[in-house]
Length: 328
Image 1: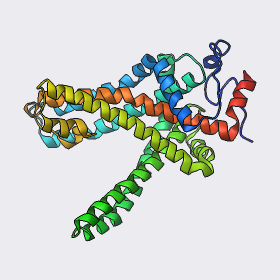
Image 2: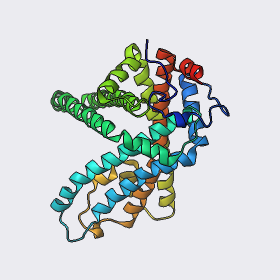
Image 3: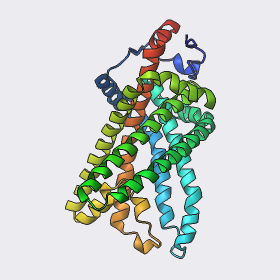
Image 4: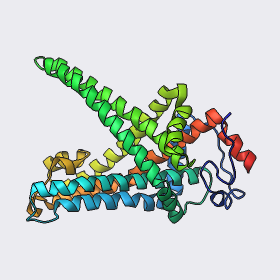
């Protein structure tokens, strides 16, 4: 029998966060099908849009600092800039994780019918940040190692079939599907691990155990739902990027080649690394700012969806909805 829901902790949510809005607007907690989960995701985002956007703004700031390093100093060579990027990437990872952590807790507050207070949410994310950061590094290291071990034999097979163009295409698509599946699996388990730490206030060890308890034998269904959530969020992101890029092209600010090379690609900054400010064209900067703005706008969508999936599993496996209503 799972541990009972406690009003003073709410599995990590402070009692003062639970009380103000409970009697005014009790949320209808229940197990949701996929369509209901998506509908609730967009409903929560629409209702608390500005609160989520204020928290997600940290992502925009972090990525803005990242791109500014590219034009740090015209006299700075590529080697020096790359050395600057090493701590910068770690800092960006930390800031992005902090923003996602805040969004997870804000999503939990919104789902349980609480008022989202930005300061309280970020404070909560800060208190749990170290555990989440260390656990995330462990997941990232395992994912990198597993991916590397998987790529080695696959790349060997791919080189062996290069004599046949059709086989190369088929096998290349198969490799992409396998790699995508591996990434989604790791991301799914990480999301449940992070939610256990952030929402329930668990330790790293218990967080690792909790994600296995909640996913359990339904791993294929959970991973499939997670993939659909990411696919939907990525599609919305892609559509907005294309729309804004097309407007810039119609205005004569960019050309079709720049639109393809810089707007459609997901990580533009890593693929074209300028050395000097003169090599950083205005169109590039404009599209990059648009891209990270779109990314900031769509970031809460998948975070809310993942958090709702976490609560959905708690309701199905632990009767979380009954515990909450009984406590209230």
